[in-house]
Each structure stands twice: as C-alpha cells, then as structure tokens.
Length: 160
Image 1 (cartoon, rainbow, N blue to C red):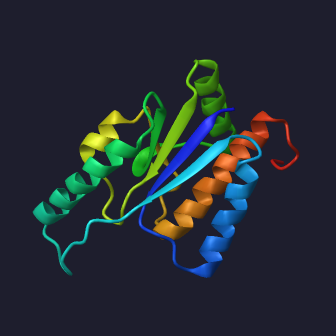
Image 2 (image 1 turned 90 degrees about the vertical axis):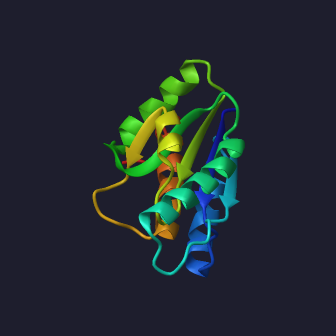
C-alpha cells in the first residue's frame, strides 16, 4: 500500500478543524498508509524583521528535512506553486506510484512560509488558490484533496 505523509507546521486547536481533519484522515486511510506529522513553528518576535523570519524558516527547515521520508516524492504547498485540478493531482499521484515510488510527502509550511531550500527540493510546488486561507483550514483542504485524489484513482463515486 502506498504511503502518504503530511507534514504541517503548527498544531490544530479548534475542535471544528480537528473534527474535519480526523474525518478525512480516517477516509484516506482506506486507500493508503497515512501519517500526519505536526511540527512546532519557530517562535518569532511580535514584529519580526525579514532577517529574523529567514532565520526562523531555516530553523524550521532543519527539522522538516529530518521528517521527509527517504525516497519520497515531495510536494510543498506554497502560494507561488502551480494550480492543479483534483483530477490532475490524482493523475500526478498515480504517475508517482507507477514510477516505483512507494511514498509521497506533502508539506504545509508555517505562517511565514518555508525556507527556499525546502521549496527547491520539491518535486512539485502546488498552490491551492490565489486566495489566502488560515493554515488550519488549509490542512483540512489538503486532506480532503488527498482523499479525493485517492478516490478518483479508485473509481469511487465520491468525486463527481
């Protein structure tokens, strides 16, 4: 069975996000071995300078890089990424599986983004929308899209 890891900077606190995320995690596990990794955001001052932000992102990168499963296809969720439809994401995952990769890893960065060196490692830079969403909602949306992509590949009626 294919492995999918979702690395998220920050922890969910709101019950409604926790409930939605748990539902999609449960559904996703019917199609793959799913693992969620929550990492703490680097603490910055109230009004951080660009240098402080860059240093914080590099500290986060050090931890992130240790959590990406070895040999995984790697996707970062970033505003400057490419927009893809649900069907296109399903096809990308299908092609990844057919290429012999046993796992895929997705990353949702912190509120200030992610280190450029982490982005440079990505096989795909994916944007969910040109709009801005709370990071916690983005997690639910990514989980739903991963579930949808797996359901599309399985020929499920979930995707219409």
